[in-house]
Amino acid sequence: MQLISNRSKLVSNKKMSFWEKIYLPAILNGMRITFSHLFRKKATIRYPEVKREFAEIYRGQHVLKRDDQGRERCTACGLCAVACPAEAITMIAAERKSGEEYIYREEKYASVYEINMLRCIFCGFCEEACPKEAIFLTKRIVASDYEREGFIFGKEKLLEPLDPEKSIDISKRETEEVLEFKKDKTKKHNL
Image (cartoon, rainbow, N blue to C red; front, side):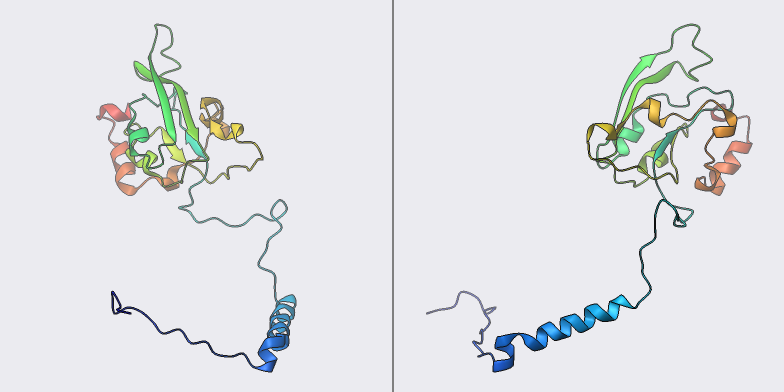
């Protein structure tokens, strides 16, 4: 028989010894390893009672931020949806009507803004792509559930509360360049 490639390997058919046939040494070795782990310190933490420390750069649940006057920052430009590699963000844009200036910051706003948390990979590209600094990832954990329907987060779950005391601090997520840019009030973006 002629070989097609030189990558073939010769397989040995080694006969098992008596002790290997009864598997007793392998079972005893496995039990020794198991019993040695019984007396070690546990790596598990009791989650509801004890909370783990997260790094400053941890990315958790998203939040849609409001400006200083409580208006929504999102202008439905779609850059976050385009930047999302998992295609988890969908939005529908609408035009602001007269009398809604205190609700929406710009003439265009997102009437529907949804993030499918089952698709989201928490990469942070959406917050990097947003020119209005409307979306940020927080340290909040997305709660688990047995049903899939609850994992499509709309504006009601994502939007920051109007109460200034309940606002979410994202200052540690901002870079030094962004903080310097925000100090310049001559830029239209910072008004």
